[in-house]
Image (cartoon, rainbow, N blue to C red):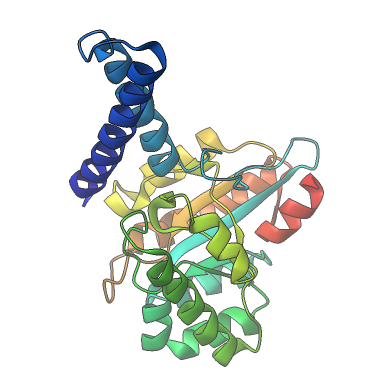
Length: 269
């Protein structure tokens, strides 16, 4: 999939470079050989800009995305992607309830269809629910209409089971294209990313998940964790379950308060 995205970026860059070289030749009455340096320069610039816009979750190339709050509030946001995924999402909810922590869950629409009762519990327990698309497929290769379908279908099923449409959208893998932001806003969702990811879906062990999180956490930080793994049914998130109590307890010991992502965004506005 990454190779397909890189291929598309390269094709667009080639087209842009050819256009730039042709314009240079026309404006300066230069030969094609003389315009070759312009072609190469334009190609590599376009390639770099497009790749940065697609793969860098914080990139402003395709529009702004909220990925951290400023320091000073002693607040962090715990966010969980790729649920609902049973039995692990319910175990995360039990831990959060025991410690009186409110979090934000970016749910996948097709997973919600499989586990509607868990989706309802997310809302019942007072957590914030965000949109993480319907299939968890990467969006940069999709057309605007298919991206909108991914977001709207997910918002529809969230509203059906919770009574509220989500106000936040996080693209799968954080990868976007030039129209992702505009479509998510048209669907009523603000595009967001994260500050700290710890690669917990690689299952490096509970100790590594806790260590990576606590090493990187800062005031205003958005922490990305996973209660699932894409649309995989019953994906093993037991290492997160083991690490989560330690993460929350240490965050509190350091004087931080874990809040919903929208609350963190309010402090930044």
